Length: 147
Image (cartoon, rainbow, N blue to C red):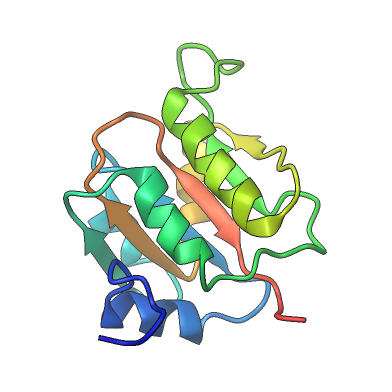
């Protein structure tokens, strides 16, 4: 146990976050995502699983130590619903609220099709899969620098 570190942040997850450089993408996905397959293609080839958590609780913990890239116009990207690309699922609203709270500014996420999200996720640094079963809980969160 570390002082002032959220216990959701496991040693493996802390390693992943600390190993990332600015401009690297953290892939955070729901329980429905083919995370094992995608993780094999990432830079670290790491899959961190956080079963039993909601997306917003996992992202809240991650954002407590993770600097969001403020140089990128789309530091957060989401997967658009296939059936209605303009719809914003509740899980995305909840997670974006946590990212906005942590970053102190409004976030208008970039939106990717399912195929584009999978390609971008495979080019990410590593994957965090949360046990949340709500669909479209799929995020790319770009790491910034600590200033």
